[in-house]
Length: 387
Figure: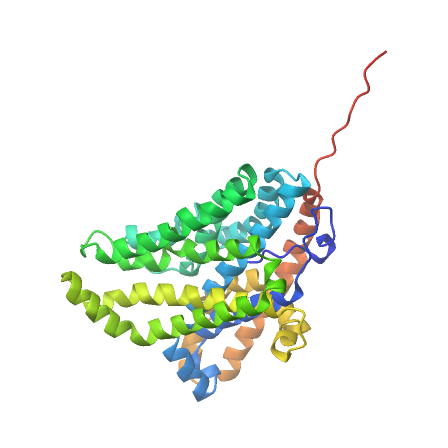
């Protein structure tokens, strides 16, 4: 889940795309929120345990990844389009960024711990396997979010590359955003049945979770205005935060009111999945909008996003996210936590960071450096006509 080019490739001819270090820090926060949600609660002080229990930090962290990915990918696509970089170059760089350690992990688990879900993951369909297939739990359930992003990467670059910027922006506003919301509403209204879990399709299905990626992409079209109209963006972000909080707090009352209105034969709490989905998107989008509007300002929280340790975490965030569930499960981190082996739990978390760092330095970064040659437009050799 890392869309940042390598440091060696940030000043290439792909245009005026300038690397934004504070987004590395924001990505670091996103992956730490996911780890917080998946790590044993015994690692944290009591007040942090309560916060984690009341709020789904992992879901917010994943959604923050989605918004960041939509923004960063689209700004690269728009810049590449202007610079004449073919879309196939972008797709090649994406493949070099995502596939190597992903399929390496699938291969390792296929040899050491075979599971039917591995085939779904190999096809980037694991976000639908729990809904459409009756499979036992595995160590790869977290790959659902990678599937959502990959579906986005497979379609959106073609839209940006082959349509004028104004038209591709309209696709977001007129098709993707309303389509995702309507899909979520339709799934809630759909009568419950035993063939599939319609609520799981809202939580994990690409047709709904693409909403956050689309909002992030929309921000890329207005990147310049985050500096020139910072106050307006901050006001909009504040409203989005307030709306997210209101939806979360009022979800039971909203669900009961909608239940009475539509008189459908399922519990009113099912509407909470819809309000939670919208609230998370609002909160994650408002977070990115606030950071973009405040960048360059002398404000301590923004400066913290550029702190080297946090940026370093953001740099290895893809490996941290990909490896953490299999590593935690293989080493029995939750069992050790229940036994009170706190130092063993800490050692496992440290091992995760070590594995992700080695993965980045030994596998990911060398491949990214090779792929960086595809940031420039192809050289066209012109042959002078014979006289």
